[in-house]
Image (cartoon, rainbow, N blue to C red; front, side, top):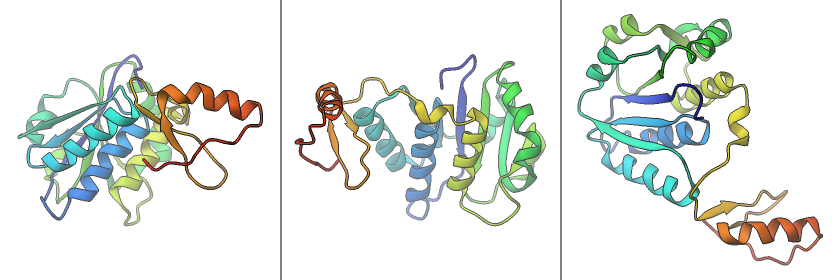
Length: 199
């Protein structure tokens, strides 16, 4: 969220074919809920391309990068590390400490895919559980980021988008950004004559 230090999500591990959708959703969730970058394994090219495409269409700033060494990123990270795992400390017990750590350096948020090495648990400043029950890593990341930013990420403004979603009580509307100002003016005037379109 462009604070004093960046928040970076690391997707640790990826099985091509099996994890493509989940890894993509990790990246999209990171983008939508306030992270500044996502780091993906080098074999997650399809997910990286999809996330970059969404960022290009719906705005940023948000960066997608790939690396062939997740272990190297963790070992060499110059800042606090939060590892999301159902076996960790309850998020409600540590969220204030994690939030305060953003004043000291960039935060690396590790989201495991396949089984992660025990070394990761040892390197992390916090092993954090969003409940200690089985759940999706995407759900865990979403709850973590919302707690970290205390809901401020929901009001994020997106730059350099070429389309935007117009919130509606029912239905869906996606329009070119250059029409968004007119859409707001029409809405304020009670004019609902614009046409619904798909993304």
